[in-house]
Length: 259
Image (cartoon, rainbow, N blue to C red):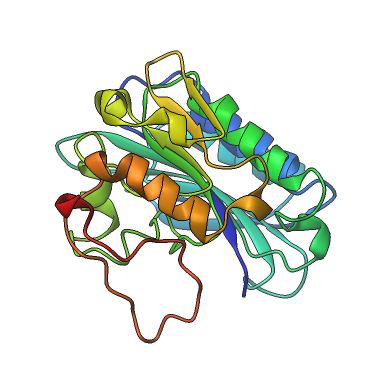
C-alpha cells in the first residue's frame, strides 16, 4: 500500500495554539471533501478516548489539545477501516526534554489524494512550510518512503534505538532525507545547499531543502545527490535492508559517517 507523510519535530519554544491549529486546519487542507472518521485523544488522567467525527467532537478534541495530553489525532476515512485514511496527529514525548511531533500520514487509495495528482504534492509542501516556519524545528519532511508513525526511512535502516532516540538527537544528527527535508539550524552550516532545487533559510535558521521541483523527478540520481550533500550531518552507521520490507526506501545504502 502506498503512503506518504509529513513530520515536524519541535523541541523548543512552541507557539500557543499551534497543536490546535494543526488538528483543526490540516485535515481539510490535505483531504478536502472527506467528512467521515474519528477523533481520539490520550491523556494520563483518562487514557484513550475515541469519538465519531462531528463538529462537536472536533471542538471537544481542540479543547483537550489546549491542555495536557500525550497524543491527539483526527482520522478521516475514505472507505472501511484504517487502510484507507488520513491521520493527522500531535504527539508529546514525555521525559527530561519536552518534544512535540506534528504528523500527517496518508493511506488514501483514491488517485486524487496521491502525491502524483495535480497540486497535491504542493499542498503537502505548503502545509509543511506553514507549520514549520513559526517554530524552531529540529526536523521535518515530506516523504513517500517513511516507516510511518513519525519514523523516517533512515530510522528503520540504521540502528540507533528507534524513533524517539532519533528525535531526541535530531539537532546532532539529521533524522533522514526525503524529497523535502528540514534541517535544523544547528546543522545548517555543514550542508551543501547547492545540491538542491530549492534551499531557503526559515526564520529560526533551519534549512528548507527541496530536492527536485516535482516529486516525480526525485529519482535515484537525485537521492544520491541529496545523500552526498547531507552526509556530513547524517548519523553514522551502514543502513541495512529489512528482508521483509517490500516498500521502496529512497536511501543510499552507504555509511554516511565514512564519507
